[in-house]
Length: 59
Image (cartoon, rainbow, N blue to C red; front, side, top):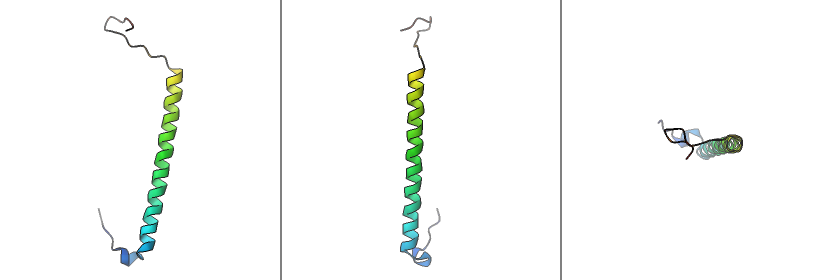
């Protein structure tokens, strides 16, 4: 990881930009988690899953 001298980039401006990007990434991550949760819920409601033993008998 490369570290930059924040004073060379305007100090606070660099830090604020970093926080802004991080906040956006976290928001996108949460949106993806919500979308996956919606897919899982839809799949769980529409799928019938049986658990069987080795002879094929539902347990």
